[in-house]
Image 1 (cartoon, rainbow, N blue to C red):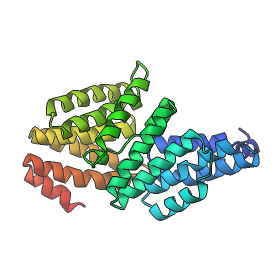
Image 2: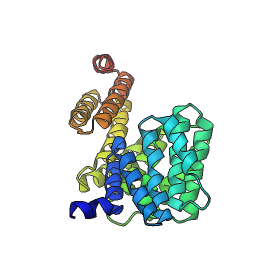
Image 3: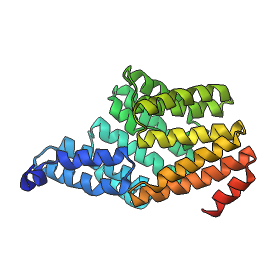
Image 4: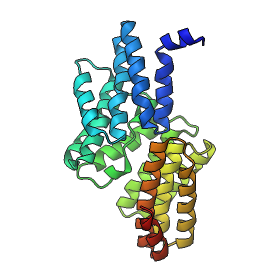
Length: 277
């Protein structure tokens, strides 16, 4: 597009922001979505403006800027919000509450998110954007909504491999693991890995799958496999271009890697990884 035309098209920053969302590049999303929303308001398309706006608090919560995220939620909440905007607001609110330690309220927001998706028979891409964080597994009141999300996501996934189906299988694995079914969790992990490989290992799916697989290696006391897997994930994380994403991913891998290594009895690896935190 010519520069003047490109600057006037709200769909371009909006799509660019969605690409950033799929890669967890949280810092790129707010300026892109604010620009798209402003252009749509100039064109009197308030529904699209609300949809773009709704991704801003989600990204701010992903960055850990919870005060700004909450302020944006309050400023952008109006009657008759589109379904996509209402869903994203509920997701952002659940992340804020998680960070603040309000676990029961966070589970309530998760239930609200899944209810919005189910009642309105939301499109598969919205189910994917509402993917629950694994940290929800085990929270009081969260198991029901998590199972509902897994079932709904799998029902709406096409027959062929998709990231949505892969994410649902990973979450199913965590839920089975929480219930004590290690064999079932391995089955879900294997199915998710097949989806991931077919899709050429999309970043978000590969990361979530890698964490589940690391935990399973630890429980089976497969120490060599665990060490190799953690080091590969750390190497991959070190090559991520987005600095904030690279730092967050590496920190989480070091923390969970050390924890899982300790569970498996791999003391040397646990000490090494914890020393790098």
